[in-house]
Length: 421
Image 1: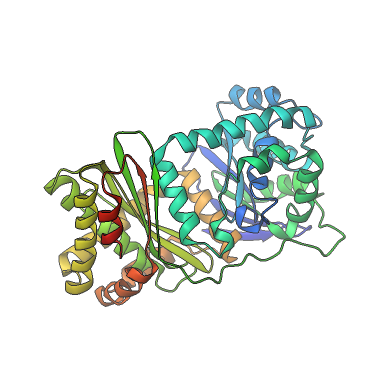
Image 2: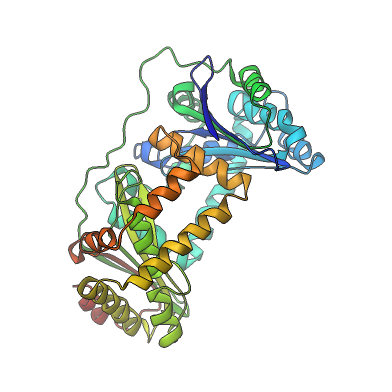
């Protein structure tokens, strides 16, 4: 059973006791990311995520690594557009070690200027790595283009010029406006003793305070109208990487489950339409898929394919043929039921991981302020009808919202652009 508790300082705790597991996964979530940054700050949430591991007032970066290696545990973090999470997975007997160190990272990071100078180059290499991976670049670029006019267009990693400019004071100021109890969630899943866990969290996180100033994080701009756009980026590589963005549904949409069913059957699995048509039937690609990029208040339905320069036009044409086919003919009942069954199975398998459970609970609580139980989630999936899926197809595959990005050795730009008209 998933339970919610509020620490005395206001931090929300969501927890699920799984007595038959040996592990515990703990995530400290902060409601911040690129969507909460202004243009000059873009990328700072990601820099802070890196810097919290560079040492605290009581532990060096090496001390943190050794502490988890000694107990066979794991510690890491990630920054998303709308949340940042610092997490650890340990054997249940070592829960206090994880709570202690996670709290130390969030509360006592030194943010040393010298370490920042070193880490900025690590992040600049990360930016360069993305630019050297055309598939990653294509996915990033279509998100930037599709969400133009919205804060969701800002890349998580930020532009290089920002990363080069950030100073220690910038990080401290930003954390002061975002890292406070009312803007945080602690998510815990695994073998736990609930009273002891709450006592530990109070002990290690209870002294985190809300800022005296009322100048908290500004709400992101999510209202925008997608503008149709086609972009070509030439690279001397073997493949052409195709990335398409259509109107998607938000994370808090009532049709979110129908949207998941649609994405899964259209391009989310080996039996999906895109995979079977473009890879298995035509043999044009190694990788092709669709994915739902959903955020609170907004979303994008993405499609990716990597193919040869001379076959890009044929692959793109077949993608559009599959879109027109599903818009015109809908979906047969067996395909609909197979997609629901697959999602049902995938969800049940994810429940075997404390990390997956922790992340699902934390994300839902930090973004929506609530967490559905496993039973409620499965009920919502079971309640999706074929009519629900068919009803959202025209809205999702609205060609007037299409953003298309092509990266690589592009043989015929005019032909690709014409297909996107």
